[in-house]
Image (cartoon, rainbow, N blue to C red; front, side, top):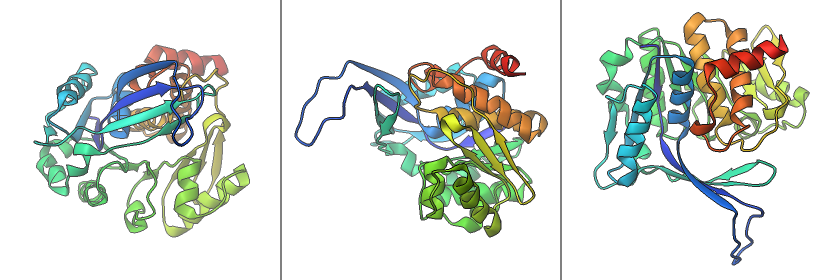
Length: 306
């Protein structure tokens, strides 16, 4: 097993809108789609599409969305042995609003995701020990995140933490035990309380995390590219110029693809380069997992820049 994703799944309810309604206002929207999402599931699918052998530890409800979510994960070859149903609970859902500029606004209802517990990590222990990388996000309880980080440390398994959605309750003593910390600009701003409007400000904010003891900070900056900050160095990787249609799930696309290449050969620079291309392609189509490109498409885009 290459990668274990311990995290969330959601059903994306995507409304494509011309304008956000004001208080008390009803507007007609031009289009709607239902898709499979959730930050954890998105990252698992991204890694699996690149060729990684992925397992997922997650919880679904016992509603009409549950079996579809499990079948969707399995359709990408993801191991769902530790994807369990929670009786009497809804699956996680995410109403998403996408405007004409391809920017999105998202609400999440965690549903069964909030029942993923530290005990679920231990229940999957034997299979988790076979993995070369653990990937985490913040749509599940923090105590479960902390147990997963401890598990990785106990068994010498590198851990990636994507702090999304950002929480000020996040205990940085655990973040410092992770190998890679991957926020976007807004998450970095929330977690540091520092401005992130310019690259210099982003560098300064990321550097405060390094000074706290975080090992590697990789900041995804959308169309501005990616900044990799360590104690010794700062590297920039430019984004690819594409026509964005829907940016939903782009951060997850980056994290999942990055995890694949990191697990494959340990080359961080190469992993960032490939993940930047993967994320860029993901915004050129509608939807979340449905927008994720193939390995051939990613390699073609990277080759065009070489």
